[in-house]
Amino acid sequence: MTELPRDVPRLRSIERYLLVQLAAVQRALQEAENSITTKPDSSPPRWGIAWKRAPVGQTRVGILHRADCWMAPRELLDARAVFEARRQEGRRIEPCDSCKPHLP
Ligand SMILES: [Zn+2]
Image (cartoon, rainbow, N blue to C red; front, side, top):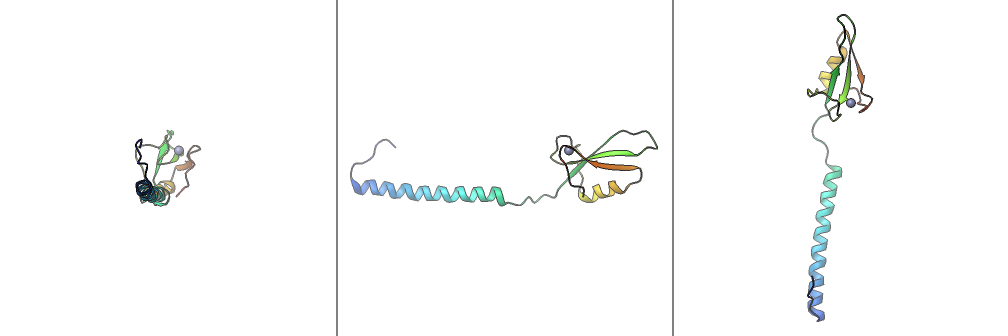
């Protein structure tokens, strides 16, 4: 805004217009910030198990990763599938040291 009028009534009009615009921008900004911080994540948590190779007959160890871990395998599991995998004989699941998942 380079050219402003010099008379008070028109300056007041511009001031009022800009204050209304500023208030609208601040409201929109507040709504946007609130939606970022308070929007609950609707997707259920997921995990991935990276199985280590083990000789036949030995306990097979799997490393549990959170879905967002860079070491997580492509195939992701829900809590029930992880729970089932943990119950299988001859298998042991350990949490990843990097992403530190909570075991479901
Ligand atoms: Zn991990």
